[in-house]
Image: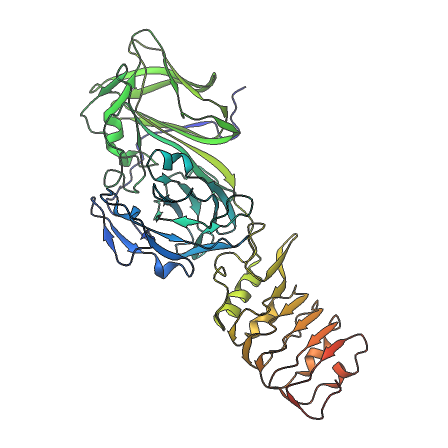
Length: 511
């Protein structure tokens, strides 16, 4: 039985679409660490990354003559265990996006660090650029993610299990895709990480923008024995995935009366589900040929009829493991051929902090200054990458259960929306510089410990604070508060509290 888990293989023919030559909608090209915008040899403008990130230090690489100007600078981030440093972008909530970060640590610096990539609350992959660095080349990663809302976060995570240095990045592309591109994947549950994208039979440069309207990189696959080329035009708008027309102008063609056997992708794969798309066009004008397509001895498509107009076939969840062989076997008088192919790994979309808590923390963040620099992206997820000072419970809903910002040098005021964090058991902003009143916290029905001592808080203590029956510790000393301490706090025998020194309560509460 073929290793196909969902709607087998779909044949794509003549779907009329318009492939523009400019990036559409919410798309971003960032030159990380750059002081000003740069323009590459293709005329694409790359903007400085500063407006999209709140952490990290720009650094220039001491290299001359780089063909790609975006490799001349990078942004370094601290190595703080479990911290994620995020870029944040406005996006269309109904669209999918290609994310393509680029990493180049230089050739004479210490060994490059290893770190994690995270999008919203989803762990994507670990970045290890050591092999590419030995070859003197940059490392490119690519994935397709759905927008989870009106903003998207791309994060670099400092994983303590890897290396001793913090993450870095040289360039980042976030490009909005047209609706039909990769639309057979269920992006409600999965994202796609690129394994290989190949232009078979090509000996030239990597195919990119402007030939590919989304700046996807089509790598070459030279084979002088089987390579042929053609000059007829295939309309890429006829294909859902909008491949560039030039990928159909080269091909690998089998010898007469022999199958075409390719080891592709060129790397072994772990046993898992993959998205596989193959592209075909007859190299002879007004001609057709018929052949079978097998992948690792399983039938991928039978009696495929390929004409000079071109077509593509794909599987949304095809099981691959180890080294992969693509085998094309003729069923007509002409030998089989192949022009291009893409393989993506599929990985699950991660869970997110419950919206109520995420919105509450965003409001709390807006009312504070000098907050930790990793307070961007999802507050809790993925596991192990909660915001500094934030503890979460990953139950049926992912909830924030503790805020501990002790001695962080934070100023500003406490937003009333902090009371919407209704799963909180612990709340501490002790030894900071907060001012203003303590908001009404009556909705915090699980709160056990409230530590707000040694700040600059003023105003009075609301009676509702004493009605939180779970409260066991209350430390408010060292502030500028006035009025009377409510009796329901003073008379609570199960409460450990401290209101003095500091404050100007009247009558004066006992120490």
